[in-house]
Image (tube, rainbow, N blue to C red; front, side, top):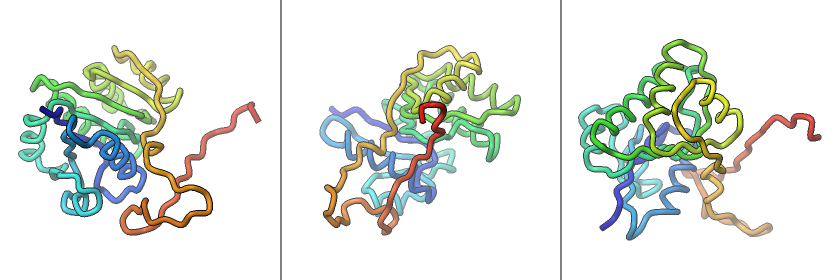
Amino acid sequence: MSIKLLLAGYLGCGNFGDDAIMASLYQAVDGNEFDVKALSGNPDETYRQYKIISYPRRDSKAIAGAIAECDVLVFPGGSVFQDATSVGSVYYYHGLIRQAKSKGKKVVMLSQGVGPLTTFLGKRWARAAFSMVDVVAVRDSGSAQAIRDLGARTNIKMAADLSFLLPHTPAGVESDSFNVGGMKTIGIAPRPLGKAF
């Protein structure tokens, strides 16, 4: 019997980074042990590109059904807990977690980037969300500190971005094995250098 995972985040919304982490996790765990589905901004495209069965991320009835069917709600990464674009983002993801926990589901957050969180409501919903989850792993020390600053009651782990799970092509070999949205891709992750350099 397989464990049913429901992936949540800014998935299927045309962001290459978020789709890369979704594809990475799917490729890493899909099989006999795990059944992977997702909440997507474009379920048809998510299935066409990645063969992941998805539910519309803005359809409350579909979301309720997907959460009821899953064993674990998984956030595979990205920076969804931030209110720079809109406090609505924090409200939405807090609501998913609250709904999953009300149904007795486990909630796992992997390789999260957290912040900025500057609004009263953004901080309040994020603190509540992180306090409810079963596992929280962040991708950088700044995100860990942001959760601590919120006062969330949770044990924080550090983890690499899941996009590192994608297969790589040896140097000098041309490959079409990793295309996102039908385009060849490259990933760049700039980070502050600090005093080390």
